[in-house]
Length: 216
Image (cartoon, rainbow, N blue to C red):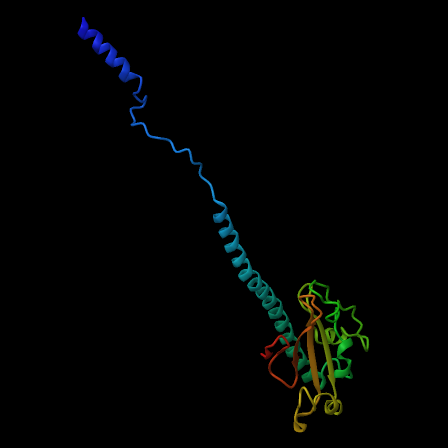
């Protein structure tokens, strides 16, 4: 009988501490998972550095995309002007000289083209003398959709070329002075008051980019 009571007592003491699922009990950590202030500050600092690198790169990508469109349209103008010269013996925009370029831009000059898109004029079938859009209608050149740059075309006679392109910045040799045209695109993409200009002409093969790239 004494042996029976001893076994029963031992059993009670053991059963009070045995885990229900048979696993070995372990001490639960009271520390909750989370980030320290220093860790958060490091994350914020890294995010700021990445943003400082990425934002200018993204802006540069947008600018290159916009200028690529403009360069392509200037190339179209050059081809259409060459065809027009072959048919009519002169370039569209005939009679307007370099001095008329500031007022030749459509939909507008850099003051107007400040970071937004605008509609390019649509021909009404009437080519009015002095209309800045008339040369584009004459050669059948029109950009697809809205534009970020204003475009202008001027063209002159061999006599005008002496005054317009013989001197700076073009310095065309006297033996090469002839009918000519100049097509420009301008905009203030950043809205900072500084105009960007791209240009193609009948007397050069390349496109001028005022954003530090020169003839490209």
